[in-house]
Length: 286
Image (tube, rainbow, N blue to C red; front, side, top):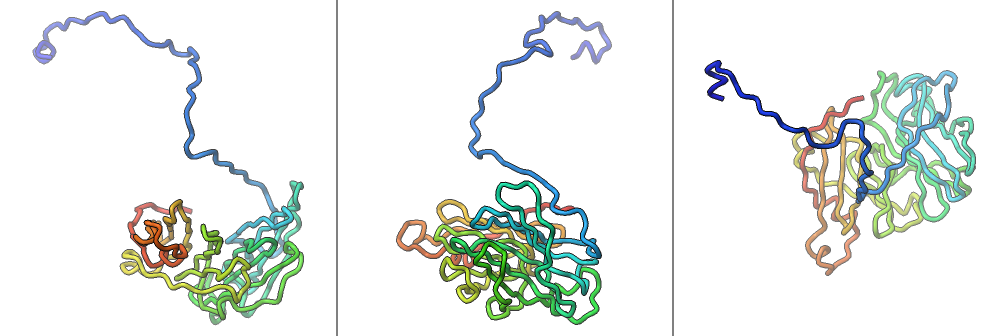
């Protein structure tokens, strides 16, 4: 180095190259995959629906007969008077989706976000947010005044029960489908709380509302939206929710007596009451 700094001649050594020549094939490495394989596919359900160019909030469920059902809302724009709830079906063994059909349309109180899911052995359920704000509404407005409704089907979504208020007509929103807890009960994340079945039937009167304790981030910035919830092994829980451009991730541990096996609390109880919150500084980009 001193010779280089003093601008003196530098001796360059000769080193015989070692290694594997570029382009030479190597034996394939066998790596263990502790996470399993991720399967993903994308296919077109429909191209256009006349007079309904905007579509949003799609959810999918498999009926007991193997059919796949997708439910979403659409209209001329988000929050429009002509907004309707649509359903499309792909029968078991087929590769083509059926023509979307209108499940519900009400220009005075149009349907918004909806989720479709299995409850019990054969029952299908749809829970949706009915927009009850005064009209006309600006594009994307009115989500602060929604009431939850539901309907069920016992024949794989061919016919549906009459519409009933969900949880007595609670003013809430929703975005994601429920998860099946280790106990077999369903836990449905709502806008500012949760709903849990009292049994596995999934009827409207078998649900109970569980208010969520605000996390540190909730108290600082206000309630979050679009909860995504997962239960981990040993009854641990994980929640991800959206707040403006950020994602908040919250972790939950069961009470000490549940971890030690002294008590078998329903996971939904501790999952809501025992939040340990951290904020993931991730930006959600559309």
